[in-house]
Length: 473
Image 1 (cartoon, rainbow, N blue to C red):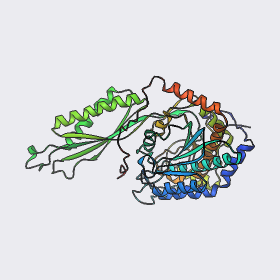
Image 2: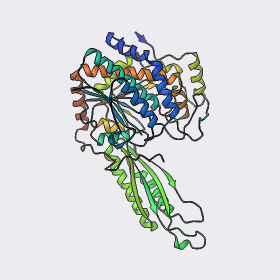
Image 3: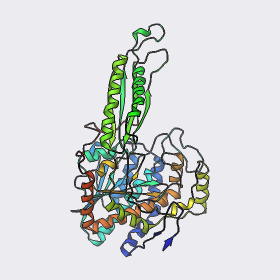
Image 4: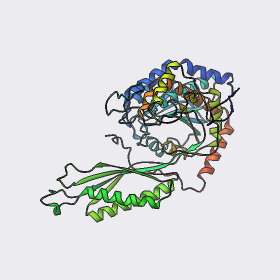
């Protein structure tokens, strides 16, 4: 049937589900209450990166109870895991995230009200992400078993996406080397399966060491580590004029001294560098290191730095995205009930913009024009090793931005759960298509090779550092 969409959308044909697809989507729908309880439990725990002990354990138990074998603590990360079912080729992987963000605690109500002041919250919806991926995995596992289909299905539990680069360590450990296709999704304010990209990103903490002294009686004896940080920041801010215009450089001073009358002996600044191309990120980061070195020389301090994380840009795969889009059309969007409409309208009143509540029902028309995201994701590193396709589902009120209390609030309600089920069904149907179409895997891998082209071989931007398990301390 044809559905007339808003001016931001075009006419599209909503495909119907065949018998096999109906069994998969009906199974996921029949388990709605189970997956809702799992998602909301993880939402309540709101565990930040590398500390997701309870969230990881719950997802592992759910998969283990469904006959998956579990490898825990992979890549030297206690909360990372691989759940596997089946054997042989092809090997299809589904990614699952479950870390929260610090500082955005929020009740599931449409007005600002933290559960714990300063506490963490699922402002990027990873409680929904992880649960939907597990739901899709179990539905496909049951389909494989019932139909005696050969192949291997894996669900990768990937911690600390938010600044911890959890997936990068799994890639570096070779845990994706035998995978044929990777599928993922992300919570959003719209339903979308267009092939898109992201920004490559590298971050580091620059630490300056000086000499403390009384700032009034003997300032000549002091060497201010804070002067080193501020001198570095000044040079980097001048550098902004001489980098590609798509570049983003952000920093915060994480330590600047203890008291005004004590010359700071230690200071630290935390930097992010982003650009659509990983080669540019590498080059710009080296220039920032030179600024730090110069600042140390000029202030007679010393400096060292620690790489915190590094992410490649996401490589879109049109071959897989086209299939995922058709499945998203088949699943369709959702309708708000009266209570959800009231909740959504109150959320809309908290920010400016002309957004329509009913857009949660719509599917963004497919376009091969690459979407350049303003953020970064460690899925990018996976996409340089394995053909990868992703989608978004409308788990938030239209117009809601990620990393906001409004996202936390909607994610703790039936709005988030409805969007989560759309994602689970779409991911499951796409996995089914990949398992039954060997040519699809061949074409997706050929496309990946073309994308990589003459680029340097993949090498993790994190170097040989260990996972920063304490980065949220």
